[in-house]
Length: 283
Ligand SMILES: O=P(O)(O)OC[C@H]1O[C@H](O)[C@H](O)[C@@H](O)[C@@H]1O
Image (cartoon, rainbow, N blue to C red; front, side, top):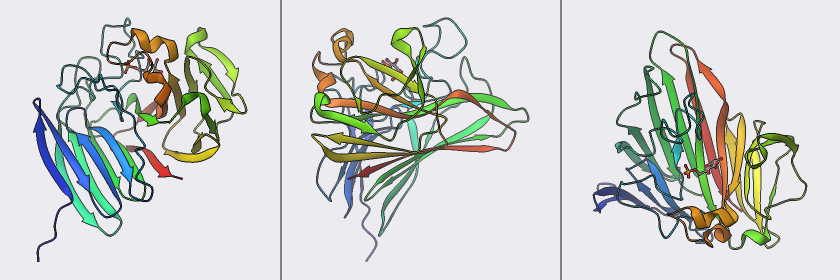
């Protein structure tokens, strides 16, 4: 008997979605943005990602929630005036291609690649792909390879919006060292312990933090394992959610962004390859 693929392809509002349903987990991925929207491990049937109920799912804007792919710059760090180029780069607003999909006993592995990697603000020659493994954990690898003859510098992030039941009852552990506070003119501050989110938070933790645990109501819920990063970004807009058009004013209560990131500028030599990896581990 031929193997049954665990991936179903569907179209809605002009976007293409991949729905994965295997023995270990379900997941939903939009080819617009190469954007993961859902990951539910069957070990506890609990959604790990948050997507705004007001997210644009028609290609008009980047999707608010899930895992936006930021590349080749983070935020407005593109060297031009703020607003001159798209925030977080140009991969999250383009249609990606499905390159491959495979099932085995440990889950489903999907490979995607963006349609183009050169645009205003980044003219270097490179290949980008993303490999997503849906199983007992979700592993996302964003791979950048310099295929040109000159070195280039870039940044990137897997800007994951994690679902939390109540932000007021959420703690993060495993983050140490200093962070840059975007809300306080980039002042350098010490990471708090315990690390609770009590108001608007926008922090770039400047260390290659490998493991961060999200705990809700005193229970370990999701572990975030990062590789190939030089930073971890923690973001919750709190009251500012009210001024974000694709977010509910109270949407901040159920999400926490923990973003596996390169924000300090990574130089890639010709033929060199970099992998930014985030593993979402249900606890
Ligand atoms: O609204 P977006 O462009 O998707 O960005 C959402 C957020 O992304 C990151 O977490 C940045 O640190 C924040 O400053 C930004 O507000």
